Image (cartoon, rainbow, N blue to C red; front, top):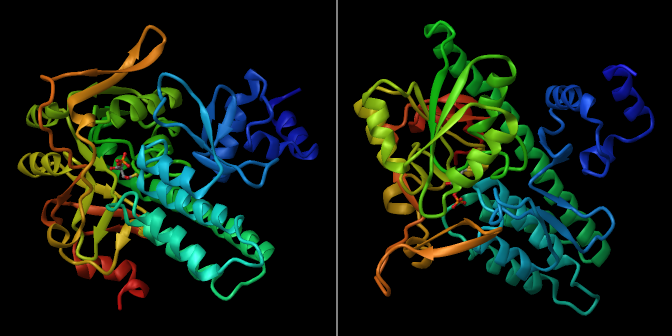
Length: 414
Ligand code: MRU
């Protein structure tokens, strides 16, 4: 059977959804073709051990279960986790089982769905959902996607009183948010690819060296990723790229997650210490900086993982283009001045005083400083618009200033 035959057979026999949900093992010799076709069709990208995954999905057989990839365990173990209550969702977002701005937004929407499953004819719907929403939104303050998705879900539910219709609508809304984020990431990939291609042409096909911080990959989104979407596209098109991956202390999302993602997709990369970026830029070893975004303001200030600002300063000093890639769900059109208005999350000191790694078949944390030291753990920093070359969004690329952002998103400006 040829590869094309195989794919047609799959469609004919209705196996496509089974493949998408990871229930059908694709024979090894057909994996590449289905990967390319799925990618071109924008259905799904991420193939792990012969199965296609999103980073979050509802369990097909149990309407009370939302499934996620446990990002705390990666890259040492690939495990999925069931979320069965609002509290489960809260805990998964807080402890970073799920993380990354678009993904925590989607998780929040599924949290509202799980809250609707608790509703009976005696429940005061408004206060039940209102409480669930405030609880969910309180778990991580910086990424605007969480409050955006939770409030969007509430809006969709307003006025509905039938419990079954409430949960049907809430599930539909969460799935709609997932699909929107997948589409957004795909479009971000198309726009970002043009920037990579321009540099590749100037370098006459030598690898384009892109530095990234944290993980703005498919794990952080639902599929494709923001930073990784143009990178995966370039790689598939045979445009040579090489990624400098910041380890990203304290939680090492670069070392654990971005390195794992790029490795599974076959993209060349080198892991570097967080402080190495400036040196590499001075030596002409970085062509481009691509970072994600947790909250942008309407004038283009960017909140992203702690350390992003220092990379922006180094890029500015070395004349290296610095782009932030984001769906519009990460732009807070209400805010203007990021430094004054964005709340930066402060997390547990243990994340600074210890490091988690893999030893003797298990994940272990070890202390890296004297006992009982005081540590400060700010999760994000703000890069002012003046250091940002541009924003790459689903609607296109724009300068980091109010006028240019308004041109792309005039409907969002009041
Ligand atoms: O603390 P995290 O891991 O949730 O931080 C994630 C980031 O800073 C990402 O760059 C950001 O969420 C963008 S994800 C497309």
